[in-house]
Image (cartoon, rainbow, N blue to C red):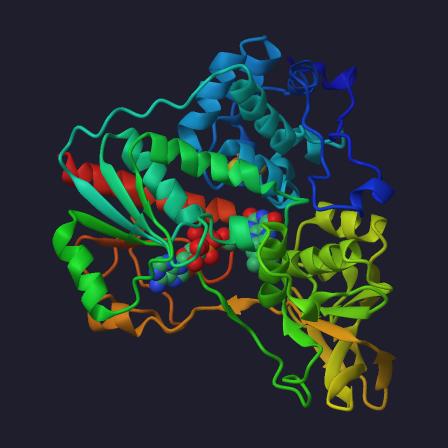
Length: 459
Ligand SMILES: Cc1cc2nc3c(=O)[nH]c(=O)nc-3n(C[C@H](O)[C@H](O)[C@H](O)COP(=O)(O)OP(=O)(O)OC[C@H]3O[C@@H](n4cnc5c(N)ncnc54)[C@H](O)[C@@H]3O)c2cc1C
Ligand code: SF4
């Protein structure tokens, strides 16, 4: 260990840009066991590992599995990594590590380049599956049953930890496939859909019942679950797209990010192609600066758009998403217009033809500064398609409220620190509690809820 003086930080190899743009396959290759080991050997093994204690929301045993893989014990690394995390190979791919574990790594702060924690984490489990290691699920032995509503990372995490404790789980999902935003939000070039499906196949093989096309959205349906099961976990996400409320926003050619990304993924799954998203030769403008905006930029480029411009009202440094995804979007040909805010959608014959933008500037005011529009700086840019990636809020959940589950002032489910809602026996986590956040924080909520449920049901 402590080989950081001799070995430089390496990130996984990427598919070249021209090949990447031809399909939706994953861009990053997976470290082979040897490369994962060599990179892991750089770890200092800090006495007080910030990567785990402050960086990773799941407090993964990062230094321990780094040491195991560096010392050629892949099975131990696999076990340790899958002990605290419900799906390390997924989070290793999609976590914004620069803001989490790798951002907290001592080596990064000392200028040596942080350990490539995410890539090693993915490699440990992927190479482990390839070697035949499996996650152990005991057959349900407790006579206790839990209903899980939704199948995103919060629910998948909750179900995984419950089943590992021998509690039976039934999952109710309104969509035709499980995975929530792991399936219908995050594009395949970041996370291959077979990787998500594999986790559900494992749970189903271990006895989980998965009900697809099965929304729970009425008082009656929810009360029936509450009566039939020993506990209920609610992980329904927050999928209401934020709007700009500008002139022309409802016109043909203006779409919200999730409508677009979901339609494209459905097309990839072989369902009917949505002709609104035939982008060949189209000028596409994406509005927003976070991960969803980068996903829209990169998806539009793969659809053959003539140009894809991302307009963001703040500057590059203030972009809220993952740095690596911004770099990928730029490499693939995305153009960026900073300090630009939309004022109106311009139409020709009822269809989008341009967007009136105004320049903005940041005035010093607190940590993020105050954004002001510069009077008289309006300019029109040509656009055939506008994709709005402005964030998400909670969908109405009156059915829950009517049953006694208190919602907070933003419309999310109110919980205590153990993810217990105001209605005994009902737990919640992920975006439906926090508002739009991250897969790893959703996974953390699902895990905390599961641990509390296990404590209550198996006491
Ligand atoms: C385009 C995009 C890209 C993203 N990229 C990243 C990224 O790179 N890294 C990252 O960490 N995070 C990313 N995120 C955020 C991350 O995906 C979410 O924070 C996370 O998926 C939230 O998990 P969840 O389980 O709370 O909800 P969701 O993933 O939204 O899952 C909720 C599930 O509940 C189902 N459901 C809703 N209502 C009902 C009902 N009444 N009955 C039954 N089922 C219901 C939904 O169909 C859905 O399947 C991204 C988000 C988007 C939109
Ligand atoms: S789950 Fe995310 S934050 Fe935690 S170690 Fe893995 S990549 Fe880092």
